[in-house]
Image (cartoon, rainbow, N blue to C red; front, side, top):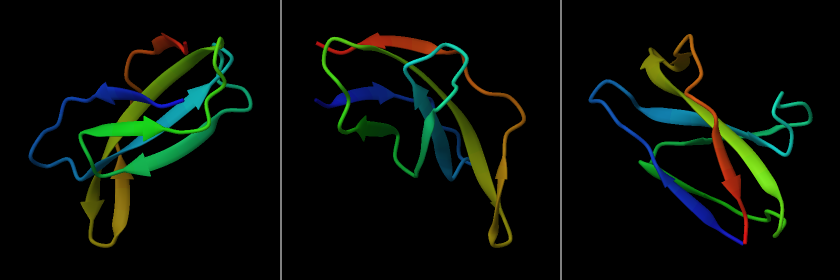
Length: 79
């Protein structure tokens, strides 16, 4: 099952850290990074509700500098 979400992008932003979990408090969450405007998260269980949030990063030399705050949490039910 695949789910795509569109994210807002700015010129200085080089990518996003995406965090998703079955729990609201993000315990046992998984993370992935992407440089694209949208992301397809694979291997999600159908019939479950996932909580997803993300934060942007820029490149500071060769290191990633993440934004301070997470986005609003998106609640997604997988069909």
